Amino acid sequence: MIHIMSFGYKYTDIPEGYMEIDCRKIRNPFTHPTFKGKTWLDAGLQGYVIEDPRTAELLWKARDAIGSNTEFSVAFGCVGGSHRSVILAELLKDILRDREVEVIHRDLEKP
Image (tube, rainbow, N blue to C red; front, side, top):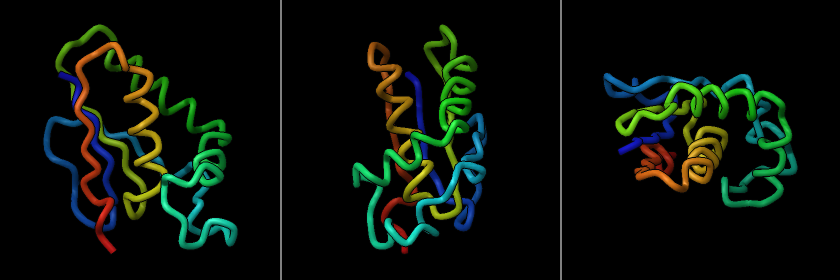
């Protein structure tokens, strides 16, 4: 199974054994006035993150690292774990839709 986790660096480290992908260099919707109070489910916020060229770079980095492995763990991190990392985790799940995948958004409900 492919394990995908999103997390926030401001909380705790990721569990051992996960390949860590740092999403903090992707532009941050949290600091953009248009997206104040919006969640990762907002289509405009998703588009804002997806349009950043670093998003595709990080997704392909994860996909290439997973390769043909049937067991792999990857974790996407951003500051709070509720926007960029969640979106990338969900996008990777979609890319791997023909594989057995588990997604955990560890810090999504934290303040």
